Image 1 (cartoon, rainbow, N blue to C red):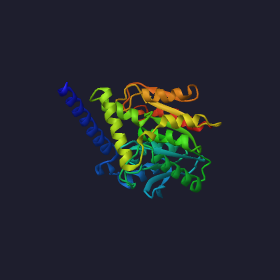
Image 2: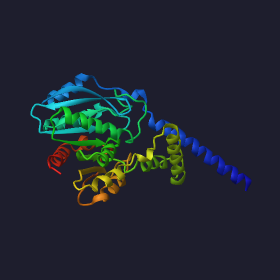
Image 3: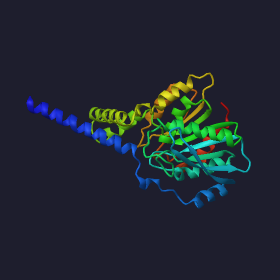
Image 4: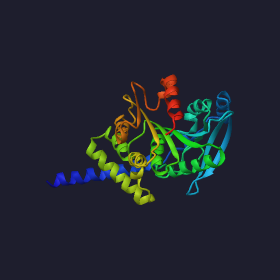
Length: 301
């Protein structure tokens, strides 16, 4: 019995240490991931889409510098469109999407999230602070672009950030979210459970979240697009929402989007793909993506 007790304590200690390591590593993006393609690449994409390129910089509520590209079409359609990349990526990874939307007349703002690309900050919070950053970009768009409405397309973490923001900021009128997580807590548990069984995975994640809350004052459980979507859908005029997910997504399983869809079945547009990797809808199905997503954004809420 004593040996068993010691073994249980050792396992718990190992899981607690693992949780702390996971929290530290998940919130810090390596500097090597913050490389951007040359500005000439973005300029060429803008010109090819019939737009001009502008560098933007704003300041987040906590003083962090946030940077972006803006593609301004020669004949704007009156809508500003935010394009948000995923974790560990940067605005260059979604430049093709930005050019696509610019061709359709959208004034496209493509930010680097905090702790990504050339934006400031040394930690990512999976939407807790980033939702406020998105609201700052909406502020800027309303003051400087002449747009009558603001919409957003996001991938993975970027998609989750937009859904959480939609619950906090009613100005975001439409969101197309590709491969979002329902909650960061569940996504983290899914990831750890791919290596160990689910109960120990849950314990490690909870320990990591508790450590990070004590260390930084930031509760990562607030990275909760599901709660944001529920709040948004309770409004008299809710945002329009499109969810895109694949049955072959090994990074964020499709059950996350199915759970999000169930918040308002019949009102949320759901496009489920077959045999498409994580966030690869446009790369694998460019014509269908263009038709479905641009048509979605064209319809008023």
